[in-house]
Amino acid sequence: MLYVIEDMINGILMGSIYGLTAMGLTIIFGVLKVINFAHGSLLMVGMYAAYWAITLTGVHPYLALAIVIPVMFAFGYALQNIVIKPIFIAEKNVREPITVIIVTTGIWYILDNLTLLVFGPQYRSLTANPLQGQMFELGSMFISAPKFYGFIIALVTAAAIHLFMQKTIMGRAIRATSMDREAASLMGINQYRIYNVAFGIGAATTGIAAVALIPFNNVFPTVGVLFDIKGFIIVVLGGLGSISGALLGGIIVGLIESVGPQFMTATWTEAIVYGLFLIVLFVKPSGLFGQKHDW
Image (cartoon, rainbow, N blue to C red; front, side, top):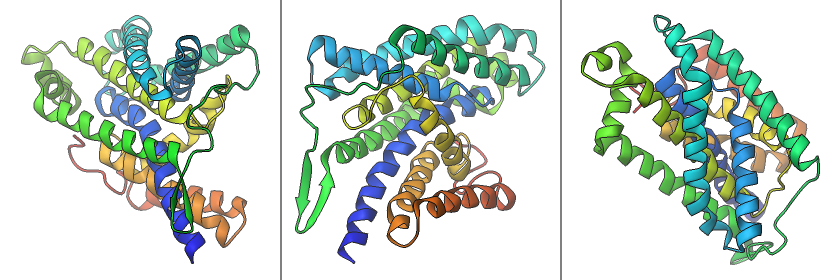
């Protein structure tokens, strides 16, 4: 029984990090109303940015947030402004432009293969990692310290995004645009600038997730694919566009993956995750925590 409790705690911690990786995806969908298929590649770029920031400067892994967040925000802002914005302008009368999905798929392949070309296929990990193997001891239970810190980072990030959306002028403009872009435009809101900012926030959030992952996860050109699929499952479970839903959806997936192997093979736990995903799609397509207005 003690092992099950330990697995549940570690599952919640890892699940919160899964939820953090999915927050950027759900932010972009909540505003732009399109699925960003390059989300995993943005996470990969964030992990490389974190890796090189830590390796070259020697800072503590979590202090790399001061470098990674603005870099990823600028990258996401520029990507939306230069590559995706022209499609929205060309298809301004379409609520959910399908062309954007095709373009983000192309960005996914370009970023992954460009990274492979520049950095090679090698798996990289932090050489001087102060968090490596660090554990918290609770009686007879051992809890991963990096995952616990990742849990705290996920909670703080979710709270910060919620407060930003609720309390700031820009946050209210983003919410207004996500609810009705035409009405927001009539009120003087530049919807394309809002899209740029929202995409930048989504990319910056993946950067935060990258820093949370880097102390215990290898970096390689296709690392984003591992979290991309989970990200889509999580946002569907939690509700597309819902920040709290992404966090709770991630915890559900983390619990299944952590506790499931105690009673069945890992293959069956994956089957349960995908089965739950399909059930939610059929029974409640808006997600377990989806609401009329997701913010």
